[in-house]
Image (cartoon, rainbow, N blue to C red):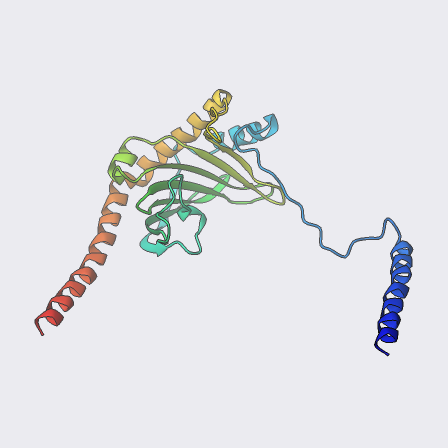
Length: 256
C-alpha cells in the first residue's frame, strides 16, 4: 500500500511538469511586464558633459552680485540628531565614530529678494557635527520653468573653528542645479578612488571659482562671519546649564 502511494505521488508530480511547460510557452514573448519600471539616472559629478557645464556657468552668472533684499528675513539655530538628515545637515567626508549618531549644531538664514528677478529667495545654512563643518547657499528661482534652484556648498574639518572657516573664504566644493522634470546637474570636487590619483578637473576651475566668488560675496552680504559664531555660541550656552544640573544632581545623590 505504501509503495502504491509513492508511485501515485511520483506520477502526479511528473504529470504536472508538461502542463507548466505548456503554460510557459503560451506566454507571448513581448508580453508587458507587470513589474513597475524604475529609471536610474547616474550623475557624472566629477566630469560633467559640455551641456551640463554650460548650464552651470549660465546659472552662476545670473546670481545677483548686489541684490536688493526685502524687509522680511529669518534666522534660526538649533541642534539635531542626524537620524533623518536634511540635505544641509548631511555628513561631510569625515564620518562620525561608529555607534554614535551624529549631532549637528546649525544656523540658518533666509532672505527674500525685493525685485522681480530670476531668484525669489535664498537660504544660507552652516552646520557643525563635530567632524565636519558644511556651508550651503541655496538660491530659489521665482518662476521655475526649467531651473528650480542653485545650490553651492563647501566643507571643512571641524578641527578648526567656524570663524576660521568663514574668514578663510573656504572655496566651493559642490555645485548643484535642481531642474523641473529633469535630472539634477552636479559638479563636485573629486578625490581618487581606491588609492588612485584624483581625476583631472582643471577644465572646471572657472566654474568652481565662480561659485566660490558667489559664496564669498554672500558671506559679506548676510553678515554670517559674525552671525554664525554668535549663534553657535548661543547653542553651546543653552546646552551647558543642563550638563551642570546633572552634575549637581549627581553630587547631591552622592552626599545622601
